[in-house]
Image: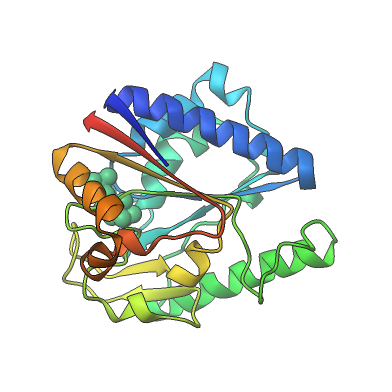
Amino acid sequence: MIREFANIQQASSAAVKQITDIAGSAVRARGFCTIVLAGGSTPRQTYEFLSAAANAAKMPWQQSHFFWGDERWLASSHPDSNYHMAHNVLLSKVPVPSRNIHRITTRHKNPETAAALYEKHLRDFFHLKTRAGMKSNDLNMGIPSFDLVLLGMGTDGHTASLFPGSDLLEERKKWVAAVPPGVGSPPVARITLTLPLLNQAENVIFLIAGNRKRAILDSILTRPAEAEALYPAARIKPVGTLLWLAAAEG
Ligand code: 6PG
């Protein structure tokens, strides 16, 4: 489904409403919720709005767990770090317990190690939740379902750190993988969740702005098979719902 907005402010307000609704129903159903945050600059306003008192009051922060769809191979204090942006604008401003913040750490010897350790962290997290009986019906062939995955899309059709032409688009086993440097902006190495994990989500919301991204979305909607070969974002086909929030202007 696609919802269109004149500007990013309106699209961000709609995103906040979706996030608080999804978190509320997940917590009512099972006692906790899992949210994957998007990187890049487009979600900044959503995070800002979500941290504002009136919206923050609607979030079950104690029961909400935050993850990242991708991270750049930078120190967590670097202004281009996806963690840094979400922390500064949102997570440092709301009463979310630090144990609920599951960032992709970059203090390791290389991105491959960081990816393997994040995958292990996810496996342990969902395993414990399952053993505690809180999410027992959520494991489908061992791959867990996040309640909500927020994503952005680049003007080349990439999403998370899944870039056009990457071998990772065919990944079937790993949940998290390293991406070599040289693509994206900044062109540093990255760590990304993979399609098998992203596509197991209960809800995926893309937030995009501007004409160039809109043209890619149009081709994903009208010529899906062709688009899949060109744009990684076209391969996001979750088991749950897929919503595009598209702003005409950024
Ligand atoms: C990243 C991303 C990436 C991003 C798109 C859109 O870390 O770069 O997670 O997939 O969402 O590149 O980025 P903008 O919102 O900055 O256009």
